[in-house]
Structure formats: C-alpha cells, structure tokens
Image 1: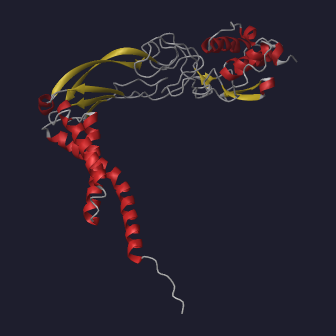
Image 2: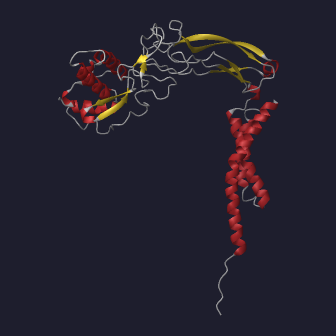
Image 3: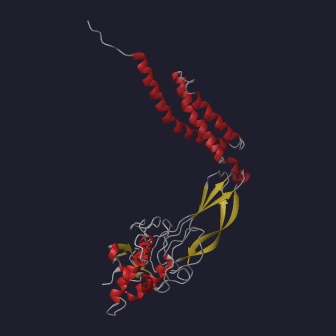
Length: 372
C-alpha cells in the first residue's frame, strides 16, 4: 500500500495545489457520488472511494494540509507548529463557518443569515430547521407613538421557494438515505500517518438524509432570498422598546420547516437613554450604597471618594446629552440607577464587613496573661 508521501491527494481529487477549501469540497462531492460502492459496481470502486475520502480528510483540514504539503516538499518540519485537531473557528466539518443559523455544508446550500448573499448553492443535505424572526427597528416621534401610526416596510428575508414549494426537491416527495454514509451521518477514514479519523459526512452534513433532486432555484434549501413588504400598525400609546409582531413574515425555514415572524421594535428617541446617559445613571446608582453605608456607620469621610467621584462622572454623562421630560425617559433612568445600586451593593457590603472587623479589634484590644 502506498504511503501518504507517495500519494498525490491533489491529483486524486483533480484539483490544483492552490485550490480553495470550497473547491476541494466540490471535487470530493463529485467523485464520492460517482465512486460510492452502492452506486458504482466496478471492482475498484470501494478502494477508490476510500482514497478520495482520505484525500478529502487531509486537504480539507488546514493543519493536516499544511503538514502534507511540507512532507511532499521534502521539509517535514515546515508544518511543525500545526496540530491535528479540528481547525480553529470552523465549528467542525458540518458547520465550517461556525454559527450560521442554518449552517454552511461542505457542498453549500446554507445561508449566512438575514441579509446574506442571494446566490444559491446546490446541496443535497436535508436539514429542516425553523426560520428565524426578522427584527426591524422602526423610529417614530413621541406624538406618533401617542396617537398610533401605520407604516409600510420593505425588507429582505428568506421566503418559501416558489418552484419546489419549500421542500428543496423538485419531484421527490421525501428525502432519501445519504448514499455516502449510509444514513450514519459520518464517515470513517483511515488516513495512514494521521490515523483513523471519524468525520461528519460532507454529503448530508451529518443528518443522514439527502434531497433526492435538489431544486435549482433554491439550491435544495427550500427557500430563496427575496424582498418583501409588510404593513405595521403601531398602536396608540406605544412606548420605546414595544414590539409589534406580524406572524409568518419572517424567514422561511429550510426544507419545509415553519416560518418565523416579522418583529417590529418601536424606537421613540424622546424616551430612550443614550449609552452615555445609561452609564451615567449607573454611576450614580453605584454611589448610593456607599452613601448609605457612610451615614449608617459614621464613616462618610472615609468613603467620600466612593461617593463623590461616581456621582460627578455620572452627572456629567447624563447632562451632556440633554435631559428629557418624557415620563418613560425618567422610568428608564430609574432602571439604570437600580442596576447601578445592585452593582455597588456587594462592594459596599464588603466595605461594611471590613469596618466591622476593624472596629471589633479596636474595642477588644489585646488581652495579655498575668503571672503571679
């Protein structure tokens, strides 16, 4: 059996040595479908399938690829700093972009969330997941919030595909078992020098099921990025931070899953604290426990800095952005002060315990022994 140094993984996958990770994935997808023993009955199909799987396992991992390139170039120490673990920040083979709500599979088909690129990528992975809400912030003035207002909003979202009606498949009614992993969701590859490795199946992305005939319009996901319109009725008496929800107008789910809602978050600038003002009221609240402690223990002079400095800084931060007269603004200010009090309370409690211990030592003093 040829050693890893003798194998040209780039030639096996028929890609260039500077091929991107995405090009390597696509090459493996193409070859895996042709060579899988369940599809290809040629005597050497199984061996060739294992070979392309081994090539993909090494070249798809930046660290392993770096070591492989170093050994092929005759400098086995060039990649000494690389480890053998999962590539940092990739989130594993099933989710190489670590955190996308619908995941980018090795064969594409995922989306980078709301507002992502509209270009669809074909994928056989059957991954039904509920669609996320679309959150939109609508700014209105105090008068409009008081009387109520109706606004039309145009926005982007993922809507159910009109061609496949959300299933991701053009003709097939149900997904089929993944031919690459046999429904297991993972494949085991013996990479020789790197040992036996279990990896998420790049065909089904770990689900064990694939779409029989992916829709060209949506790339097999069952949804497409489109512009939508919705009319939002902000009720009379609305305040900053209130939400108006329109059911079913959020992002469509993948492969026929449920659709999220459109959530309109009302913003009333006259009632909203600026970031500086919120921090200022936090500082003022932070000083209150020390003021109470100082008055209760007659140690206000010792704690003066813990009171004066936060109050002065807090007042400056609040005043420089302007004081509002709206009742809701003062309510928000009270919430910010309360948060500051909760932060300062624990520290003030520690100071109280320190003063208590110090006072106890001062009253008791040192009691010596008398010897007769």
